[in-house]
View 1 (tube, one colour):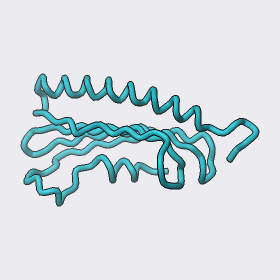
View 2 (view 1 turned 90 degrees about the horizontal axis):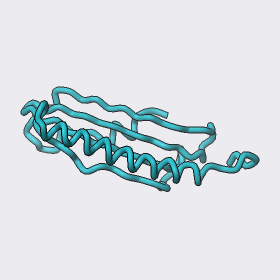
View 3 (view 1 turned 30 degrees about the vertical axis):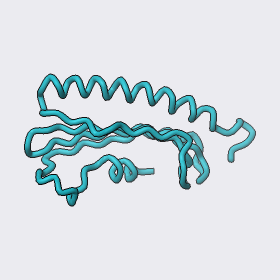
View 4 (view 1 turned 180 degrees about the vertical axis):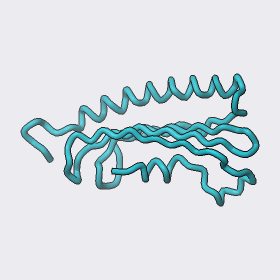
Length: 124
């Protein structure tokens, strides 16, 4: 499984009409997929940081629990867009708050993920 969902959901679209260029983008997705079959439950934690030409830094975060192949979710949290000038105290506060929110929602996502795992004798 790739970062395709992360890339699609946590990026600023070029045609969004923001009037500023993205000069740096960093995206990462951590996946937990305990079984390799299409209906397997997956836990995804995604992070995205974009730096714009005007000096603003944008943080987006996402925690998702759902089937590896299929629609719907058991848990789905996405942060609001959090933005501030790079290097500012405001940006530092946003990063700290974002990590706190991510940590809290990841704990909830892990609980949901564990609840939806199949029993040992039932792989699917």
